[in-house]
Image (cartoon, rainbow, N blue to C red; front, side, top):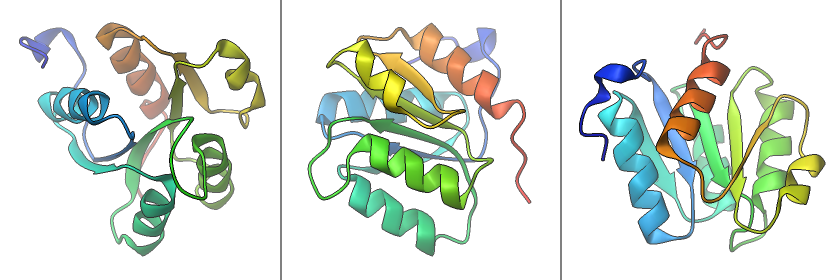
Length: 134
């Protein structure tokens, strides 16, 4: 995905990706793995939340689509994550309009699709620069 990752800061730790589009999910996983992250990918926010609550590893970053199948959408997942793990960096993406970004909790980054790899990596790096695992 990223043919030469030397221009980017490494992204380490576990990145949880929630994306129901298989191609977009694959792009995100490949991109973050190329930068050094360990990725877990889910199709629904419900499954991702269960994983986060059961995991013994602190998640370094959550990237979620806004519109997802299941009970929870990406906004609800972002709200729950910010309540339970307020220091966890969160990025919400969508192709359905920038007004979605106005409805997110403080500290959650919003990226309108289609985003560039540079924008995603720089946003993730910026959010994670203040993140530390206990």
